[in-house]
Image (tube, rainbow, N blue to C red; front, side):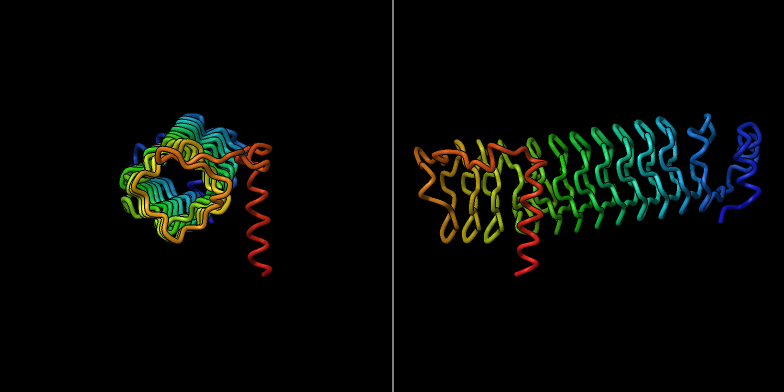
Length: 303
């Protein structure tokens, strides 16, 4: 529970500011407090505050500086956090679902096992952030800075990662089923050219440079490789059933034992192109196709 004296001080912005200036080394204890009725912070100094298990859901916290704060098990769902800063914050198991976090700064933050389902994080700063085992289903991280971030074991189905910078990021064991990672240099991740530890079935890999990538025996069902560079890639034994090819470059690619629908593919000048796009692809957008992924997973579980 929150320290009652600290909570009382927080309710008066002037007293709060005077107290924080007088005792800068004290970490205010606002654990498990419900301040959602405040709507905003009124310019209070809230750096390095303990918000563990506190309810800040639905609040307008845009531009607020929460650096080095403690948010373990806190509720920030549906909050407005655009341009806010959580740099170096402890955000383990925080609930950020449906929050608006465009251009938020979470560099070096610990977000292990946090829930970011449907969170809007376009252009977010997540450099060296710890996102291990984070739940990112349907999160929007377009053009985010994820350099050096750890996403090992992240559950990121249908993640929008278009244009993100993932240089040096750890994606080991990340589940990216149905994700859209166009314009992402996935070969710059910590794994380099070895993509075998990343789950990529149903993923949009259009126009990516995957030259020399190692995807041996991977499940690449229904992956879209339109205008993708797969020259010299190792796809031996990979499952490419119903994969989408359109002007896909494959010169020097290793395809021994790979499962492809060759009767539907034209190979010309080391380019692969489907004769016709499948109806399921033309009729649905990437997010609608998530239903197909769910049905496929349910079928696997039931078998």
